[in-house]
Image 1 (cartoon, rainbow, N blue to C red):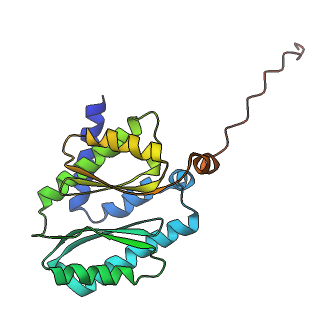
Image 2 (image 1 turned 120 degrees about the horizontal axis):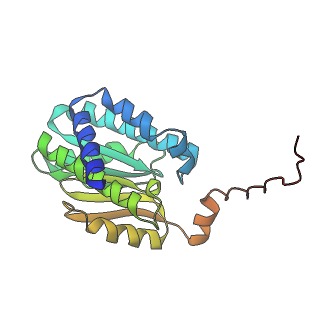
Image 3 (image 1 turned 90 degrees about the horizontal axis):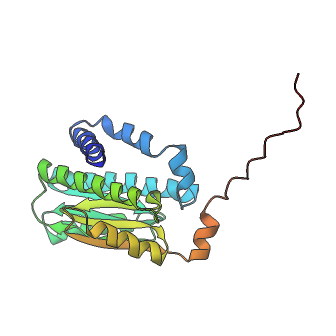
Length: 216
C-alpha cells in the first residue's frame, strides 16, 4: 500500500512540474489551517519567510532572467539558495540580492556553477522529496511537519526548528531513502523543554457516561 501511495504522490508532483496553475493548489492544500497550527514558527515569522521567498525570487529573476535556475527557501528567516548559475559572478550576485532582503537572518549559498538542470532531473528531485517526506511521516518519533525538505541534484537539505534528538533521527531516516546522495542540515536546534512548550496541550479526558439517567 505504501508503494502505491508514493507512486500516486510522485505522479501528482510530476504533473505539477508542467502545470503552473498547480503550484497555488499545492500551497493551498499543504499550507492550510492544520499545517499553520502545527508549525513551530510564529505566524509573523511564517509571513516573513513567505515574503523573503517571493521578493528574493523576483529580484533574482529581474537580475539574471532565464540564464539561471535559482530556488530560494526561507525558514525562520534563515535562507537557503539552491540551483545552478553560469558563473561565480552570478553566484555572488544572487547572494548579495538575497542578503539585503529585509528580515533575513542568515544565508546559505548552495548554488552550483553548472548547466541548468533538465526537467527530468528536477522531476527526480521532486520524487526524492516526496519519498523523504513519506519516510518522515512513517517515523514514529518525528513530527514530519517540523521539517522543511529541499532536494537539488540528489542532495537533500533539511530545515526546521528541531531538537538534537530529532535532527539525528531524521538524518538517519533520510540517509536510507533511495536516491539520496547527501544530507545537508540547516536546523535551528532547540532544547527538549522548548519543544514541550511548543507542542499543543493534550486534549482533556472524556467525561464518563452518565449512568444515573432513569429510563422513560
